[in-house]
Image 1: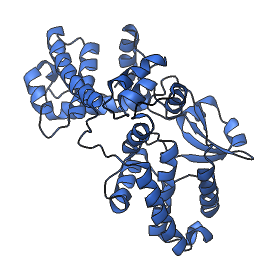
Image 2 (image 1 turned 60 degrees about the vertical axis):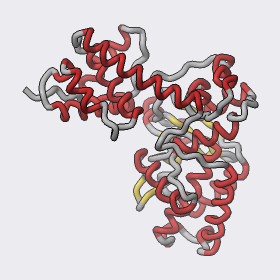
Image 3 (image 1 turned 90 degrees about the horizontal axis):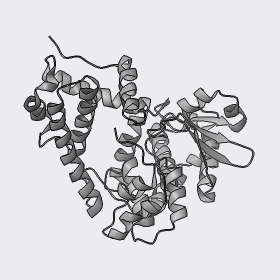
Image 4 (image 1 turned 90 degrees about the vertical axis):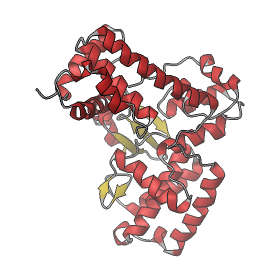
Amino acid sequence: MLPQLLNETHFTLIDEYRKSTDRKPLNKNSMKQFIANYNILSRKMNKDNYLEDFDGVMSHIDDDEVKNSTQRNYLNSIITWAQVDNINKEITDKYIVERNKRNNIYNEEQATGKMGEDDVFVTKEELLDMFKIINKQLVGNDIFKKNWDIIENNDKDLYTYYMMMNLYMIHPLRNDYGEMIRLTKKQFEMLSDEEKSMKNYLLKSDRYYMLAIGDYKTNINKETKMIDIIDKSFLTLLRKFLKVKGQSEYLFDLKSQPFTKNQVTKFLQKFSKKYLGKPVSSRSLRKSFYTETYGNGDVDLQQLKKDADNNLHSVGTAIGIYTKTNQIELQTVAQEVPDETPPLL
């Protein structure tokens, strides 16, 4: 008999189990990723009750070509479903031991400031130098004076990259700028709470702009996060960009279609290789933001709390995951600003 594959009908079972163990439910995106990881292993094992074959499962997970973080994600998915499905506890405990080993490796890398194999660091100075080069190229092609419809695709992509990187430099979210919809504040207020929590928006009011983020990884309670854009330099760039784009529905487009979240990082890496000489991703930009701001150990706790809140994660995540430092004292900062670290998948 072939292995069971999970789908959205299993969401309720998983959430009921997490509730019974006093854990918060996973949001929809995290649940989908959890199920995808489980199903990858199901297809590799290709047999019923495969979780009971510990050695066989580990032979697929414990592979030099599979990153430690990916192995950890596979094991988290396996452990959760093994507990939901009442797999033999002794076998489940073996998976937990293996997962914890990988957690320790991950935590050690974070504590020592070691960059992972996919991590890329970029300084603010590097970004500002790059912006000068790209701006000069855009000015030379008269991009700021043209209508979006007549601009060449290569120039559209370059202008989009320029704006996306400027936005990430001040608000380094995950890939939440993919499929971001433009609305006025009044239009947004007319939406239902469910509509607000299902998507991400750039809102325009009479004198300012703000982000309304509902579809993000750690949004367990389906709450929309409102973030004011207060950086005056970026607001000047944004107004010019939106004027060139005209009445487009989305903030960023790729070949006349809105970016998916997966396309955001690939797009950033492609242009960063050309203009920065390294594949900078949204994750790289978050790590760079926190490391440059707080990595020297000089921490304004209230500003850190504000930055973490606006970037949709906890202070513990900001310091423990995204800030690279060798100063042990900084690892205790999160304890001084109480908040709640989102659960790992």
